[in-house]
Length: 87
Image (cartoon, rainbow, N blue to C red):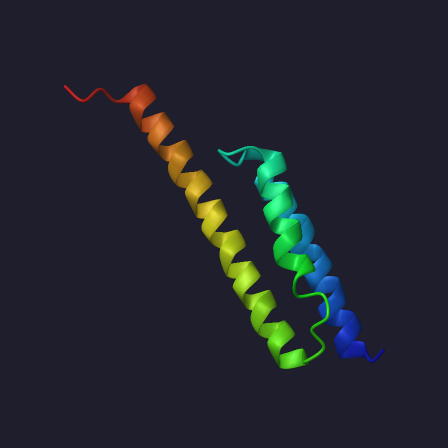
């Protein structure tokens, strides 16, 4: 294995762990999120093209940012509801 493959492998593992961590508060439940995440990563495990792997990593990082944004929005709405009345 060359260095770029090891680098991509470590990035993929880090991305998987990050997404797994983000899934702890998923509305449908952690087990549902974990199963879907596993399927998504498992179906691409045979990919060897570094460019395609890089594209998939970028897409996964985008998804992680989107999930973080959804959680922040949920937190903001909760705080807004708690401290500001609609009247």
